[in-house]
Length: 60
Image (cartoon, rainbow, N blue to C red; front, side):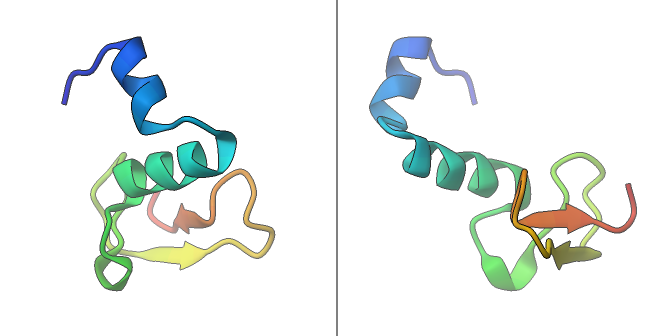
């Protein structure tokens, strides 16, 4: 998916929406079938602190 910076600012106008968007792009939109955006593994867990992301991959 290729977008311009201008298009990106239209999609993510504030920090909260930006975090949600990045999370969906990285981990998938379906919370029942989360997967790592780096390695594709489905072995993901919810982070205790939620920072920097809400989920982490056990495989990577």
